[in-house]
Image (tube, rainbow, N blue to C red):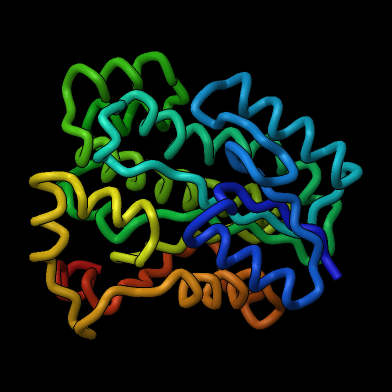
Length: 256
């Protein structure tokens, strides 16, 4: 059985993914703010360095996979923190775990994107995305606080995550490590509930049409992650999988 590092595994999609992997007999090293093996604050560079160092110590320098689920919604009222956790909390951990993944058996990484990542036209040309992809965290935090709404920061951070995953495909593939992203739609998690409870954002979520007629469950995302991380997903690499009940197809049927 393998050893996997999962961030954001105290609740929601991360918790469901942990349960799914442990049911298969895998060892999970959990990373979150509390109630896990490694308690670390991914909103700071120091917290991310701590998470990487403690993960290496726990896994002996060898990982078979990582699933990065930690993220914040745009409703929390701290745009800079959303930018730091949602992008840098993914990109820095991917960089940090890469050497350990190269020593794993059929290693793979999956990160959480969002089906909202493509809702902003020409997102890649916007200053926040450019700052994130340039790894300029101070500038990204400044732009997030001074020039963006919380929901825009959320969408653009997820857009940057998707781009970062795709840009890694050649180097990671050459190293024998697969990497993919999952773009969930509305999933019944504490993050979604926080948005629903926020005036303005909650109404927009409720009005957003999902063609299958319901919201998703964390366990449904965990099943997709398990496929992507496993041997049956061995030819899937550098991809973004929309698991959103058809919402992405509805919003941009002719652009894919």
